[in-house]
Length: 640
Image (cartoon, rainbow, N blue to C red; front, top):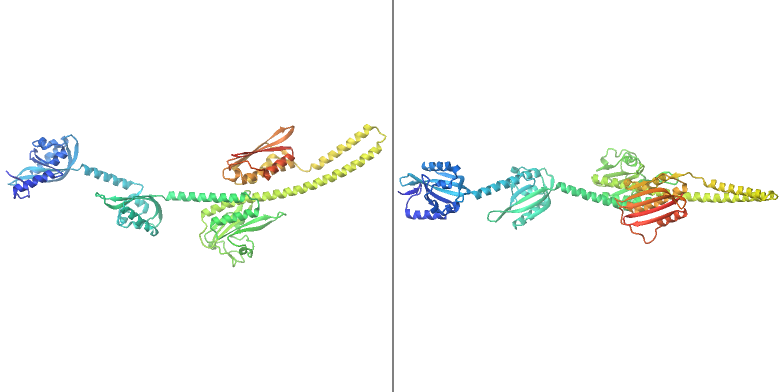
């Protein structure tokens, strides 16, 4: 009986059989022939490789040798189907190898017919699909990772056409997959950055990988997003580069944080610069000019002006101004600004006025005679005005800035100038206090000189009068006992001493707490938590109180210029107590600085140090200075 596969003519049968045998031996799939009762009749090389049995071990045995017990029913169904002359295509199942391990196979079963067309057996082709399943599983797993990733993952071909698009890409750019797949990736790139894509594709074709490239891309709504981009070449199974995968991460928040940090850094640098400029000077005119110049520079204004109040010798106020970015001639012919609806909030200290276009402000142009800017005035469109107000609420003046283009002054500019204005107020308070102190010193010197002159004259006249009285008494008491004459002279001397003492008692006393708090107040403005004072309340005579104030003024000024108050973190501690020293009541003060610049002992004594030492020596006091690296330590004793 001859057997053939249905549909293959048996011409040249011997040659056909030979070719069939060769094909079976060289096939990568297992090819097994079996009878209708499931007995294996043929077994090729691939079957041996896949199942581990040699032909001699398995031919003549049941096909169930290869089938797990729980799947025997499958083989019965397969044989029944073959018996009906039907073909089974690529049926995926499990089979057992000789070593007992199970493998995934795809089985195709064809019936075998004899010459009369009767089914006499079946051929079974089994293909190991375990590797394919592993690959498919990995592909599905990878696809799930891509789809669920928080990072945007896009693929494109070498022409820059988008091939795939995950959910994160949809969230980042606003396009759905069906809207963007098949379109150029340039859809996402601002025109001015198209050259980046040209360079990226060029590098991908060379097989390069691009790591963490920070750039900007455009969303569907036209807004821009900062991203960090990683691009890798995609290769086919032959290693040929066919495209690229892009992973994009939104770094907008990071960029905004960096921008804010840079902005804060610039702000601190500016404020530190302002502090250095104005803290080392107590001249009011120089302070306001420095503030005006720096503030005009950092705002980007075309010009800036600082209008400020000054008190004359009679205590009456008048207005001066400092300019930057414009000559004085540009303002002099217009006179001083008046309290118009625009200027009033600044000069009254009510708050900041900032406008992208001051001409559109409803308060603009309401005041006669100009109803706006005078003819010939510098053009002002963008406008910023910040009041300069002391810690006590006194309005010292206002900083004004202008630009001939709209929208120049931003919110961060307003914040920065407000901080500069606060520092300017402190410096102006200090300058005015210094000027007042200098005036008071001069006034006291003149009063002291006049008092000394008066005392000298009174003493002289009293002594002359007492001398005359004493001479007359000597004549009167010439015959009297000596004891009586001496007693009278002693009374006159006591009267003279009492007169001197009463003449000197023309001031009232003041407490240490009052004078010290007043002395350090100017240095506390803006640094309230950096200066601490502590000590008992002690009554001081006027000249001792003045001495304390002058000493603390010198120490505080030195701390602001060179010591712990010259930076942003230094601090000063001032303590005092009463003690007995060499039989005298003493006020002991201890001034301690820390966290300021590194201190080194000066090569020579400065004027302030010498003044403190000599002033105390003149009053029987004493001063000791320790120039510790961590900060100046000043120990003062004042006899009272």
